Every structure is written in C-alpha cells, then in structure tokens.
Amino acid sequence: MNKSVSILDKEYKEWVKDLALRYRNSQIKAAVKVNTEMLKFYWELGKDIVELHAEKRWGDKVMNRLSIDLREAMPGVSGLTQRNIYYCKQFYLLYSPALETLPQAGAKSSEEKLPQPVARFQSDIFSVPWGHHKILIDKCKDNLDKAAFYVRQTIENGWSRAMLLNFIGTGMYERQGKALTNFKHTLPDTDSGLAQEITKDPYNFAFTGITKPYNERILKDALLNNITRFLTELGTGFAYVGKEYRLQVGETENFIDLLFYNLNLSCYVVIEVKIGKFSFNDVGQLGGYVVACNHILRKEGRDNPTIGLLICKEKDRIQAQYALESSSQPIGISEYDLERFYPEKIEGTMPTIEELELSLGHE
Image (cartoon, rainbow, N blue to C red; front, side, top):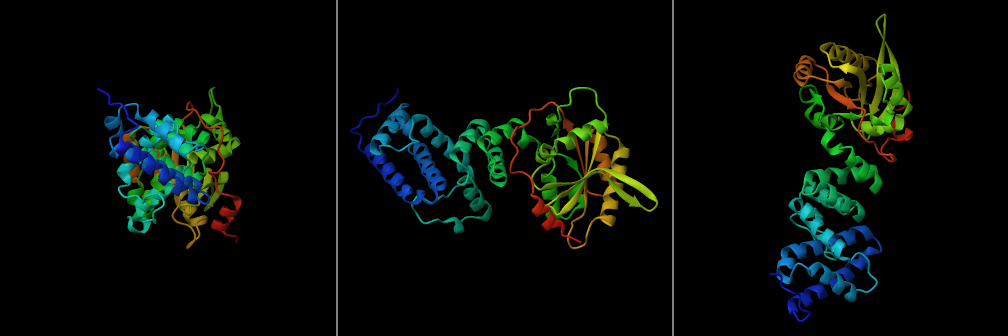
C-alpha cells in the first residue's frame, strides 16, 4: 500500500530544503563549470533517492511531488521535472558501482585520494553533457562497461548526441577490439592491448552503398571514395597513406592494398581486403608485407613495429587461429559487413594533417 506524502512530514521537508541549498551552492561554481557542477547535483539527488528509499518511504508518487516542491523552492530553475529526477536516480544507479566515493557538490575535491582509474572515470563522467547521459541510461541499461566505453569515446572524439546514438546503433561496443589476433605473442605487453583495441569485428562497410555483385577493386574504390567514413570506421588515430602502395623488394614489385599510419600506436598498419573466405595463403602474403614495411618504411626510434590487418567477407575461426599461430608477425583477422546502418555525421574522429606530419616528421 502506497504511503502518501504529507507536507507536514518534517524529515521530507528538511530533505527538500537541503536539496535546494545544495543546488544553490552548485550554482556558485556553475558559472565556471556548468556541466560538471550540475551533474554532481544530479548525482547527489539520485543518490539521495536511492539511499533514502524515497519511493518506499513517501510513496511511488514522490518523484512528482519532489519535482513540484523543488520548483517551488527554486523558481525558474530548469531540469527539475519528474522525468529528469527519474533520470537522476538512474544516473546514480548506473555509475555508482564504479564510483564508491564522490565529493559533495561544493565540497573540496578529493580526486587525488582516489585510485587513478577511478579518478579518471569520475572526471570522464562529469565531463559528458547530461543529454548524452540520458541516452546512455536508455541504451545501456545496467551495463556499466558499455556505458563507460561510450563515455570515453564521446570525450575522445567530441561526439554530439546524434553521433553517439548512431554509433550505439552500429554496435560499436560489441565490435570493438574483437578481431582475432596474435598481438599478445608478437608485440610487447605495453603495446599488445592498445593494438587489440584498434581492431573491430566485423567492420561496418555499409557506407560504401554496395548492393550489387562486386569485386575487390570495386570494394576498395568504394572505401576510398568514402575515405572520411572509412577512417571513422577504422577508429581514432588512423591516417591514410596510400592505396596499392608500391614496395620494391629486391627485384620484385609488391603492392599493398591499403596502407595507413596509426598515430596512437606510432606504427604503420597494412590492410588487405578480401571479398571471399579467409585462406592460409592470406596470412602469408600479409606477413610478408608487414616485414617489408618494417625494412623499407619504418624509422628506428620513430615507429613501432608494423601491424597487419586482414579484412575478409567470412572466416573459419579455427582456421584463422591456426594461421595466426603460424605467423611471427603481428596480424589481426576480421570480417566486414555491408548491411549495417552507418552514422551520417563523423566529425572529430580523425587525426589532422598537422598531427600526421608531426608524427611522421619530414625527411
């Protein structure tokens, strides 16, 4: 049986008064850090609702009553609707497992006392706009890892809400870092994890618009005709170097399908695209290109070891794993998909020309 909220309930009235005071304290800092301080207020409001067992204590209509009373206590203040207060509760429930200790709004920050990963995550959460968090609450449900992934991507890439929605729609979290690789056995420990994270499986090539029968040249031309979207799908830090990139090895000319440079890893990335099913020969060919790049293109002291990435239409996972075990070169194997939806807006995900030049230097 629901318990009605009485305006004579002293503890309830004190809570409303305290919330109004906290909000005013947050407004003092809001002139400088509007988003951060507002999010901290929302966090504390959600925390109060959970820890006070507000709905059980004052009835299931307390959210509506709280919205009315807070707006009366703070006339003209936005963001205090019943729906927004509900989001405050979900905001706290979603992220609280990762943030056990959080300073009160208006209190001196204690970030320096938190473990570094926790402090960073705390900073990330309070750097993302509230509208983005509402999307994450709706789309990630109780999946903290998934929400944290999109928080980090939003910060790194400067995503708008529309872009965040689109990338969630492409299943980016589920695909990120999922390629079959041998990086753990062929790269230093400090690099193998980062290299794994730049991979996806499958890659989403729907932006090419290919719906009819095609060959490898048609696919590669379509990828490069949409180079901005292709770079976005590859991920942050990729810069295009060349198509059918020529490497003279002894007396033999070799042509790499696609050559990129990754600024985050400081290495060349050789990409071979195959429209058929993966075969053992593919890894042998790609491994040879990786070795050739290391001898011909890689600069000692500037570039880390070259990585190879094979993107095929389909693969037998066991066969692919055997092939990777046979190679001493760092290689990943993924599939591609032509049928997924793709976001329209892609700004803020690519390195600038200046970043690439700075990384590669001028000879």
